[in-house]
Image 1 (tube, rainbow, N blue to C red):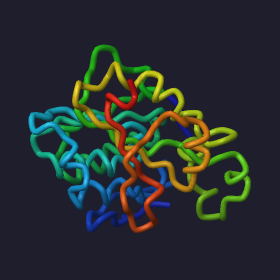
Image 2: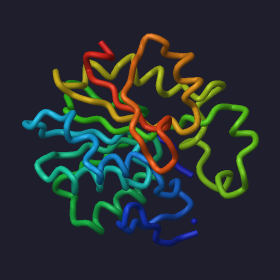
Image 3: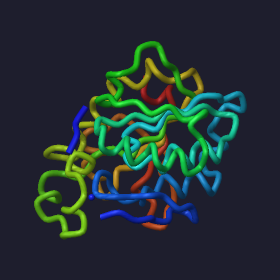
Length: 213
């Protein structure tokens, strides 16, 4: 685990989350897909277990638990500092009995766990964009933003290992920001579903287990 404060509360889709300099600000577009029900049609009605990978401040884990009250949610992040912030937000919504926080590098901390839904807002900013980030983003943990030369380093590792941790009808919902061109160059064989969001239709995608197999 990696360890490393401006304190405050930020809103995401009408929900308030504690935030400080140990984690990035809650702004994932996956939140829109959760609250609008866009993911629902792709989920097995018997779904019981979800994973929020790269949970950061924990906002997506909380929103997943609130959206799907029958699901247990595992939330993983490499940063112990970020997980400390996530724990505050889990407690704010009294969800400690349904959200398990784990410090690990991607999926490496898992063994036999299998999930029906995986949501992931990974580090995806490419190297050139990282060098040109405005000050507000440079103040946030680079660990949560930098995705390597083309922004796809974490995602390559995720796709390599994800299938073994996905149930037969599981789906992966992934945010890639402005990296669609790099995504399609890195994974030309994949044909994801792209969700319409307030930032356009090329930033959040859904892949089924079958597509990743």
